[in-house]
Structures are given as structure tokens and as C-alpha cells.
Picture 1 (spheres, rainbow, N blue to C red):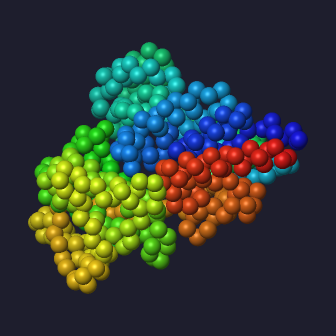
Picture 2 (cartoon, rainbow, N blue to C red; picture 1 turned 180 degrees about the vertical axis):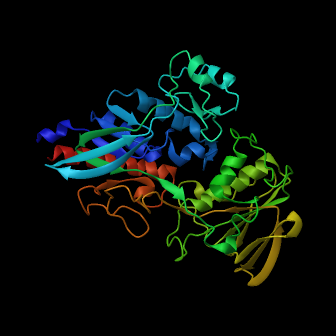
Picture 3 (cartoon, rainbow, N blue to C red; picture 1 turned 90 degrees about the vertical axis):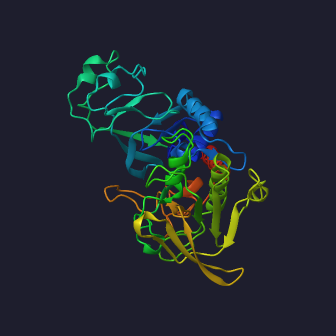
Length: 409
């Protein structure tokens, strides 16, 4: 056994896949450093309201795992941090990391709220109802730098003079778990994104209708505070399309069914229509979930891919032009809101130019395993399109592979 086994494993990404891999490795007695560029752990799942097929709160299990992660003696968490360089040196990975410390240090903050109380611009807000540890943050675009908050903070958690903190560490291996991002759909003008506030992406709709969000779960239009009569969910928006994403995004059918069913639960008068290419409900209880009757009404499914989504004059609704491939009829229906599903891609799809490293990835941004020294292990959307359950399974697999690689040295 080589002495490199004394070195920790680096995990890039603090979503469910990265958290799962870190907890599994630490549970087997191996030290881990987890790096997340955002201030908040949890990735995209932290933005979800419910999880299919159980319809449980998305953040409850995530909050528990984040707490375990933060408190585990073998796990070091680096938030607000990016890896700038990563290369093999004498059998080890040499990483150069840079942390951009926030104005309010969440470790020192005791969440007393005194800073928010004295801010004249209302620039200090809570990070999230579920954030752990609880803390405040400064919206710098609103802040006038009066620093009244600095003087009133009892623990000295606030400092406007913080600068970037570089660090260099050695690791035995790296696991890529950087998750997904929404890909810009405005480059496909037929979807109408940006032309009307009531045309939104699935993640925007999730945030808009979340029980923990600004609307407390209410289904209302963005253009004006009124209840929509009907909602259209457009599948494969940007996906399975050589112009943008060539692959099936894997999670979007179930995600749309979940959102449509919850819209009906919260207001049974709303009619929901899902336009799909192929209904892909792959997973235990997934297909049964798609057939559920909610409040005496089921989600209407239409096999057809809309060719044009266009706001009507005077905010009179949104026209959706499509061909029903089951009846071979071309139709135009009017909706009050349209939700676009499918435009999700690997966060590795486009690397920032200032970074001097990258795993070996396919044209769609998925890691090619075993292709080089820093591309051996990946999970979740870094490896392939995957939902929460699949990402957690892949995280355990990646952790086990990294452990076996350490033992074989």
C-alpha cells in the first residue's frame, strides 16, 4: 500500500451526488474535501419543492444530509470556492483553489437579525428558509456600503474588506459531481422564452410555485396577480434537438407530471396539458405516478411537439401551435401559462476560460470515464442525465470505485 492513501479525495460539486459520495467515503473512514462554488449546499435539488414519486418535501432529506456533512470529522467543506488548477504531480493531484468569502460569514453568524434591522436599503436577507447553518447575506446591488451592519453585529461576522483566499492542497483522486444547469432557450425562438413573463422554464416555475417561495405554493400568473385557467407543459424543449442538446434529459417527463399534478392539487379548477414526444417514466412507481387521478381530474397528455409558442396581443394568453401525432391533426390552443421542460445540461458543458484544467468530456459535457488521470470518477449529471434517485446510486458507486482505487495503490 502506497503512502498516498493518507491523502483525501476531492469531490467537486455540493449537490445530492457530491454530498452522497462524500458521506459514503467518510463513512468508510476516508477523508474528503468537498468543493462547492455557490455559498449554499444542495445544488439544484435545494430549489425543488417536492420530489417524485413520493411527493415528499425535497429539502427535508437534503437538510439532514447537509447537517451530517457539515459535522462529520472526516469531511472538509469548501463553499464559495472554485478549483482553478488540477494536475497530477508524482502520483497525486495538486489542486489550486480560490475561495471568494461572502460579506457575512455563515459560520460566525448567529442569525440574530440585528444587521437586517439596521440596514436602510433592505439589502440584508436570509439565505433560505432551509439553509444550514442559518445565515444572512448581502445583496450587493442594493447595498450602499454604510456599514451600519458591521457595527451592530455582535459576533463580528460581517466584513466588507474580505478578499479572495487561495489555497493549494494535494489529493489522491477526484470525483466529479458538478450537477446541471439550465441551458439558454432564447436561441430557439419558437419556444417564446423571454417574450412573455408567463412563459418560463421548469426550474423557474418550480421556484415561482414552491410552498417555501414568495407565493407560498399558490399558482398565479407572473404577468398579473390572477389565477391561470390552464397550463401547458412543453416537453423536450431544447432536448433531443441537434441544435442544442442531442440527448433526452431523463428527468423532464416525471418533473412535468409532478408539477402538473401539484398545480391541480392546489387548485382543482386549473386544467393542465402535457405535450410530450415520448412519455419516459422509467423507475419504480414512476408509471403509476403518471396515471394518478388528482381531485377528480387527471393531467391531459398530448403526444405532439409544439412548433410555435407565441404571446397573443394585449396579454390575452399564449398560443401553442402543435400537431397531435395520435390524431394527425394540427391545432392551435390558447393557454394562460407555459412551462418549458428539457433544457438541462451538464455544468461541465462549457468550462470557464480562466480554468486551466478540465476532465475529458463528450460534446454534451459528460465525463468520459477512465480517459485520463482526472476523469476516472463521476456521478449524477456529470456522468449522464440522471434524477435524484439515480444520482445518489451513482454517487455511492463512484465513492466505492475511489475507495478501491486507493486500496489498490
